[in-house]
Amino acid sequence: MRILGTGMSGSVGRALIPALSGDGHRIIRLKTGTIQSQDEIHWDPLQPLAPETVSGFDAVIHLAGESVFGLWTTAKKQAIQRSRVDGTRHLAEALARAPTKPKTFLSASAVGFYGTNASQPCSEEAKGGEGFLASVARDWEAATDPARQAGIRVVNLRIGIVLSRNAGALAMMLPAFRLGLGGKMGRGTQYLSWIHIADTAGAIRRCLHTPAIFGPVNLVAPKPVTNAEFTRALARKLSRPALLAVPGFLLRFLPGDMARETFLASQQCLPRKLLESGFRFAYPDLNAALQNLLPQ
Image 1 (spheres, rainbow, N blue to C red):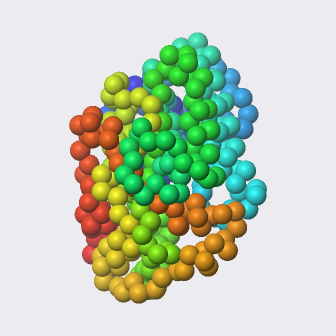
Image 2: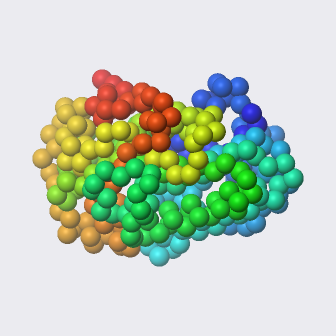
């Protein structure tokens, strides 16, 4: 297939490109920076996109969006919102008007859709929660509607905490944990819905190749863990103590309600649609995932 992709320079995109290339697909990248090859097309996510630019592709995989890491100033929250919602809407509208439309549009979303207090197991049919990230996720998914209404199969990839040794949450934790300064956040009872980077790429491939999959899909491992369980597992893998704890009241001093929405949020999500499709996780267990990512 000819596949159009955005956000391919991120950790998920970097894992996905070789997997798709290995399947024999050709990936054309929409990117905001300087164009360096014939397999790249320039775009500005905050501006409308010409339909001809996105015409003639078999599928589109849209992963672009401002990182949620960093202090949540007003400007940062606006960038998170606009990069996801405006960029997705402009792309979906262009796909809907393209002379030759793709059959499939896979668009990133996040388990933040379920809010900050989703401590009970929730699969894709669960209702959305409250809070900034939940609101962003709802608008993000709604922005794909023009493509859906044009008859394109749309999959909203509700991605959990992606574990990679080179980027994301795990990479940010490692320096402190390697010094024996790691610890749980708040009470540690909040659930983390995580997924190994290899399984993230594999799940996206499954969604791409399975016409029966559409709508929201939870990209998470089948065994979510609490923050305290994650802390113990990571410390044990590194052979370091994890005796410290960051009190919740200190975290709440972070601007923009960041602590409640991220470090202290609880999301116990289950990958029902992936499992029903027959997808087999390479790393369904946290200890096995950490063993792979952090070999001795």
